[in-house]
Image 1: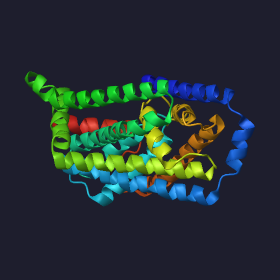
Image 2: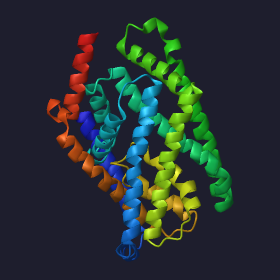
Image 3: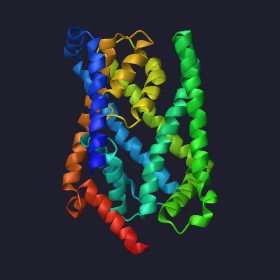
Image 4: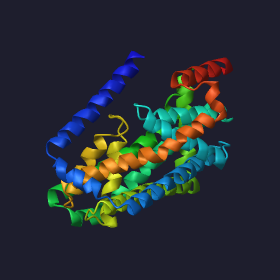
Length: 331
């Protein structure tokens, strides 16, 4: 419990420090004026487009589930994914929604292996799609930004690509390295993960479906950012957003802050500054993106309150305890 509390406090400190650092050099009056002049119709359109993430995320998760033989209906996937979105925003750790998704999928009839690996591999697929988009954007990015930034972007893309390929290859090989230690539960769990990772990424049909939905989801977020930028009157093209939003999302995926706050703002101000967007404009855009994400996730809390599982162990500690006890009994 102490470790969790310290981790949360550290993330709060990181978010606060980054936001304080940004605000030092931002024209607060200009930022406030830009926010007050937001176009409400475009803002509403951005919210509607952002809501498509719910369906896209559910489709991506279902593609993973089919690959690993997990029987979860699409209606269940949408409902659970929506609840997970809410908990990712509501809980300070930033990944609580994934634990809730594992729990609800487990309560919905999946084996713990499928529930856990399905959520983990869905996350991996989203990151792989982001790296793919970063790679595809390089030819356009090299022409859009200065030489020093372009070289850094290219070297970072190459590093991320090799790291992703190497990491997935390593996961797929774990069970072959530790065959003599299968009596240990953690080794069996890693072996199951290896098997499921191969099922997702070594089968061309499965890999295409999973990564394609990942690409669609990240493109949808980029389009949403473009719409929100237009609502603020920022001079940003849709191509700029398709180039710059994926690397921002990759940075935000690093779990070092509360809900990505602070990290997202720093990344957005830096990235969009490369194409001439003023700091206060990029900051307001990032805050607007965060608030829209928070707003669309809130109804997921109502879905949770009305769900049958809520009365069967609602806190994360109870979720972890219940799963651990049941798996100990099974073993």
